Image (cartoon, rainbow, N blue to C red):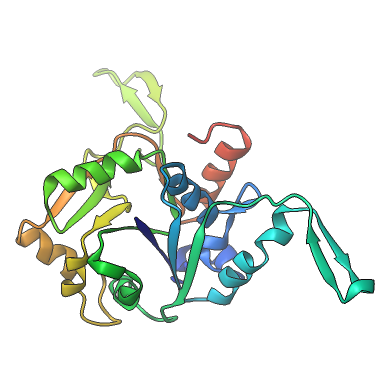
Length: 254
């Protein structure tokens, strides 16, 4: 099953990094968050990727073009016509198709632009290039198949941003609670499963996938929600990046 990753946005809320590189290329540990996302899918045998590039998309293309240089020991033999020998091929079992979907194209428009790369009217997976999770992709696929809906969206309940203070009725502090669950509402966590029919809901480059397409599907009872209660973290700000970085360095990334 093909995996479509939206990686073309400008990352306007994390400009400290995104002014120099596409948001999906911001590193967690020594690897771009895009790589971490792809590893999630690869763990479940999903290795055929379509990356929707846009803002500074050439940097994503260059990253994969030079993947061997980054991960393997190599000999450059300049005395022998510049032959290149890769000694220890350390790579992933990935097929990666990189598509320029436009610098200003909205999320729905990006998905619409890769329609011709989804053959035989197949169902496909889709997510954003800035969020990671310990979601079970196979369970997500199975849930979608049983729902018989056009689309399945993973929904999550992010934790509260700040620690909470629990007070007694007399105003005395009883205890501190670190980052309690949010207000109980479910939000779009990415990690979609989409039938080919989804393209009937996409009209042009200005289409925002999360607006009219998903709202229309919901009205038509064509959108299922897969509730994920495990780990989920987006990277919307430098604070979010620090959370991800610290978890990875500390060996605590699920």
